Image (cartoon, rainbow, N blue to C red; front, side, top):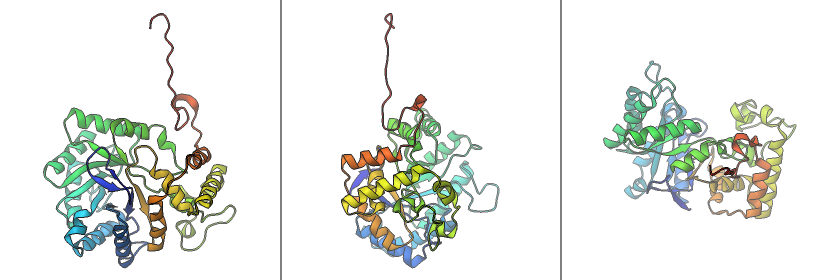
Length: 344
């Protein structure tokens, strides 16, 4: 396993993180514990959860697992969680207000059984709460020793920049990471979100790195998914919808490119997709989301897989989302020119 710093902090994290959204729902407690055991055996140390995953049960499973482990394992673990979405029925059981965050952080600490959360992330932007209220509440939690670092999730480029600027001008704890959706099929964050994070030193923690299973190669053209897969249970599920993705030629171009690179390396398509994402600019760690230990075992193979420059070029070309030249330019290129006339 390789390690990088969490954004521009001094905290080292494994380049692959264990995502736990399936814990307590798609994966039972026994399977969840097996995943945690295997992940740490492989050298992983960053575990990502959220208070809404399986209605708080994901955090509780992690807490019970930590409680059963020796001190050296607990000390090695870097625990990240999130808050923002409803965990109760009250009008203040949601959002990024000081009131909700204070209670949400205390509840997460209790479920996880830790004295301090390493990375506390706001799960999404809250237009109803002033951002400076949110940042000050998080800064208070840092000063109280309840959280070590502040992170963002699902923010747009301007929202990232505003959060950083407010934290800097008010001398509050600065966000160190952003958790966005990012993979070979979803590269639009490269237009504004990635540059904002690069400029301000935030590390990326991409979620859905395999596009909801698409990048494993298990879905096929003109063959509606069936069986025990996310889209087999509901082909029209969320952003990974089979009906939406299957009609886009770019989807199949990307899958063909991934399959070709995988064949050349004797690797799985999942490993190639994860290795490509691992090496994108400002990525600190890629969040794996697995139902089974077998899936996790395959994903872990990406930690040491190095793609050749020609492999990366082929994947970049096939997955280019085709941004208009103005005002972004194409992803991965630099559009900078200046014409000086008359001494100006």
